[in-house]
Length: 117
Image 1 (cartoon, rainbow, N blue to C red):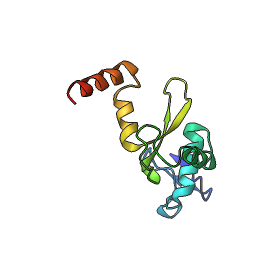
Image 2: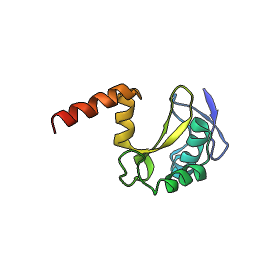
Image 3: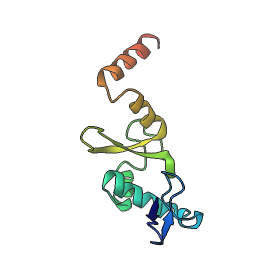
Image 4: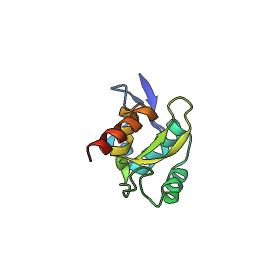
């Protein structure tokens, strides 16, 4: 299957389904990659993402720990509506996903931990 590289605009043969760029050179621009991903998946710009982080003092919206650059900062969103809720660290984002965004499960875990504290 042929595809157009979003960075250099050249046509290339896609060797696997996940290939986005024509070469490692085009792929190496991480900031461009993030901008493309945020626009495609969440319909926001990289600048809007950076503003979200700033509004949270560059900290996770759940645990309050400083956010790491790159994969350490995750956009949390409602999987049904697509509405963005905030920016989370990797651990909090994973935990929320494993709990299926279920408030009753979160309450149950909280009660369990308090019982054994």
